[in-house]
Image (cartoon, rainbow, N blue to C red; front, top):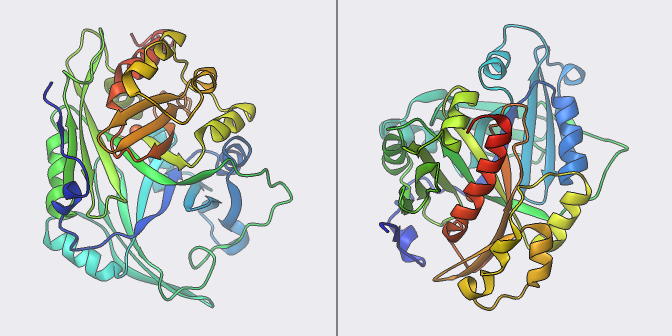
Length: 377
Ligand code: FE2
């Protein structure tokens, strides 16, 4: 085993917080039908109608629905005509994450610093204004076609961004207890992981807090390597995966093939009560990977005493792992797009700061059963 786990707050001190990131401001997905996708995220995941921009607000080529749940904001955008950048993105990748927007105090400083440290520009700082004040945004590229947009909104009192209006809907299913984005994972091509790690280290000032290689993450068939990058206060965490040689096609390779390049593999959303959240999500039709009941036979021996009732976890298929700081509970949805690309993780942390290494085998075997059905393995 060559895992390096440097635990506790020390780990984050290795990061140089020269551009303090205050959190994930929003995540924007380019999707082929934002209106219907928004309905899915409301109905299935309990997101709330929040803001809208499109024909009704004067846009001619793009429609966006913004959904919110506690601190999470998801923007779903679709093109309104052919030949747009959004349309080309969807043609290449299917539905997927385009923007991981990060909240900063000063979007100009963040951009200038990132550029001085070697970033590639997506767009220079721009001021957007309406009657509620002004927002400054700037953007840089990261892996694949994914971008980071720095958002400075301290002089803005409006709902979301200038140009958006409140999205009033008569259909408001209750929330499911999802609180914030815990981490977002990127899949990159073989040989690209370290370049991506260097980008987060050198340009963003992040520190590598964990790494896994194919000794840690492999099953009979598939293997991958992963490094986890974190900003200084540990609020922003980006694990980066690349495929490793396995007997058959790994889940990362399958992703790269169908996404036609690097991109966001999963978004982990945190809850304070995973049993209630997952029970709720299942009743609304969210599909999760199936975990064999034998996983739970060894659970108590592996993770020791936990607060939750193991029968309930087994019933739902929730996984548990322990590290030096505590334990975590997690579960993974099946992929949510026609292409087997993106999925969601639901996670509850009870002290643990890691990512569920003890569950990798059970998880990957569950993914392989899905890959077999798809004819990928
Ligand atoms: Fe994860």
